[in-house]
Image (cartoon, rainbow, N blue to C red; front, side):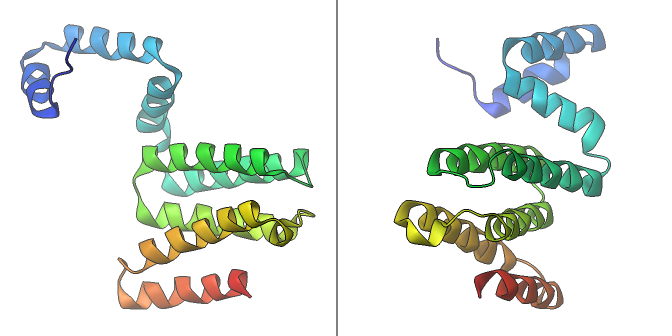
Length: 154
């Protein structure tokens, strides 16, 4: 089966009445965990982005507290989870805050990631993503984020 384009889906969804639309969304949520997580974000968490950032940062802290000396598999899993949650938001400032928190948490942990090239590359990849996102901000906001970025690159 070939999937319809977003434009086609949008045209069809506009024609549905409220009951049919509700049924389609609920069926979609039951189908896959990611769909349910996105729907949860849209309905409950998108209105308060600061609380969402705190929730993600707490999740990162929890993972580092469970495994203080993280291995590369643990870091990969955490980064995948973080990327998925940041995709739900789509907010660039949220992305920078969470990625900086991840880097700070990694530096504060007992993980000797600088010794291992793969783990060091994961850290450097997060720094690269932060820098790429910060460039899109206004100059004043860029300055503030660059100060925080300097703290974690020393």
